[in-house]
Image 1 (tube, helix red, strand yellow):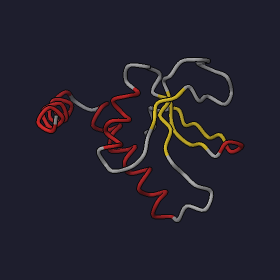
Image 2: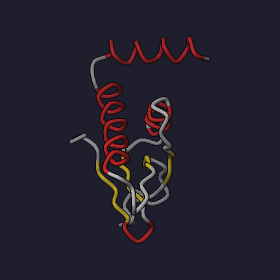
Image 3: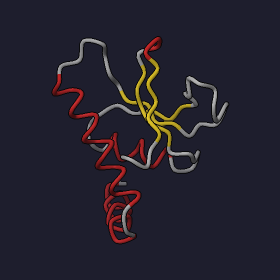
Length: 102
């Protein structure tokens, strides 16, 4: 996930990452939801950059979350990142799987 800007907003207990695209963010959300984890698209930059642009993906992370919950969030985000940002063959596979489910 080296290509994604992390978002850490300790005051609001929010973690996530920026994908720099309002069109791409819901694709990440959908893939993370497919992993049975919560994710949502938001305009969440705590530093005010990209103000108003819904290019962020937020993940659930409670302050008392066990390590396994943190690991699941990280794995789902990395898996989505690799699938979306990797070669077209992987993206085509995701599209056909998504189309079959709907």
